[in-house]
Image 1 (cartoon, helix red, strand yellow):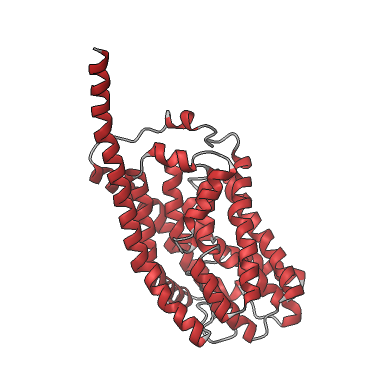
Image 2: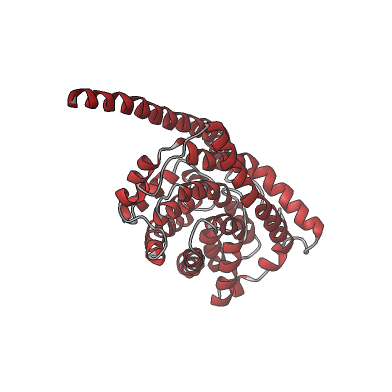
Length: 359
């Protein structure tokens, strides 16, 4: 009887294991196909342009001018139109992958990789972000999907932050368009933000649902039964309802307010600590597409912006934004969001000081 029961147990486990592997392979195929179309192929072409022309376009903030247009509905509409035209494909892909994570990837597999509140999980989350090359808003739905599967705070944050700040394509563009000094600064501060800040954020969530042991968490996280399509539609629909409205509204508001957030100042003023703080906060709140900080900084520098403010924007513009924070705020404890916000501003200020001294 014992041999019969063991054979029966093995026969039931094999189809379940095969199904899990198949679902993971489907997710990987969709992710690779989507990233190839939206990111990898376009960026390979843009890298050639950056190398030959030392430019990747004009500033989305001001165009070829020194200052942004005055606040108005037209200014808001123009910015939102330009922004969403640039990011819509990546935004759709981010929502698709964020919802598919919840229905295709087995909870036990995810938690074994990214579920512990330790540095290993954080490091794996940061490394997994590197192929994504997404801006903060497009990576946010994926971070939300990871948190819904009970992935640890540190690993989810590392994935969210690593996408924009350690984007390999952006680093290549930056080296050709700005200089290797900007790239080196971005790598150093990006590593600190992605791995150190994300890992330390686990400490701010001690009394929240941060998984400490895999067995404990797996017992609370059961992959639901039912139709895969129905579960995916519910997941995608929930994400669209909770993410998209706030995203659109805040992009419009920030687009209207950009002239106030990034005032025209002389080089001497923008190398002062007060200006560095102002630009660090503005850069943390503002929203841009992937790599848009490069022409923004280049344009500002050409009109006399100091290297202090430029250094602050180098770190803060891509890292997070008001829209992306609103997109993830239900998935992380409030104090974690505030900690990340304060960390980005603080690292931006420090980067601005380094910019004054070395750029």
